Length: 140
Image (tube, rainbow, N blue to C red; front, side):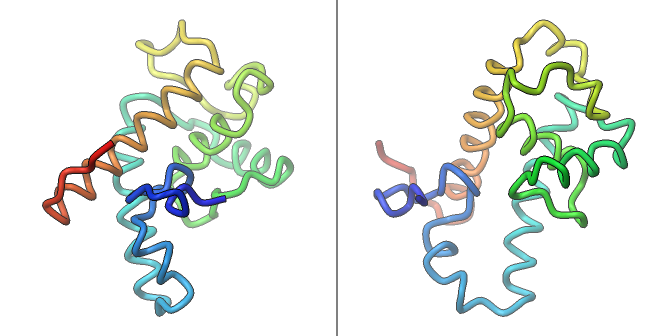
């Protein structure tokens, strides 16, 4: 269930703005692509300091096998990695088995902790982007 249903201005799952979620089925293909491109840009900018994907083919195969929702072939592989980590957490075992490497600053973080931190951080970025684009401070 989308968190915008409960009043969030930014979805906690996909990080689209509430009006984008509401109007999604009416959007033209180029409008959907613009939203997805904005979201991917935010993710890649942030994830570049957290993860690298030296084996993107290996990661893509894992995403396909595990049916990782939100991983689209045209995305940057770091977005696939974030979705896999979000969905799998500690159950993944070693990230290297999926073709993912953490940047040294994140080596000691347990996967469950990394997963939770990524979700919170990416959501915070989306909230900040909403505020930047709409000039409205989000209230809690």
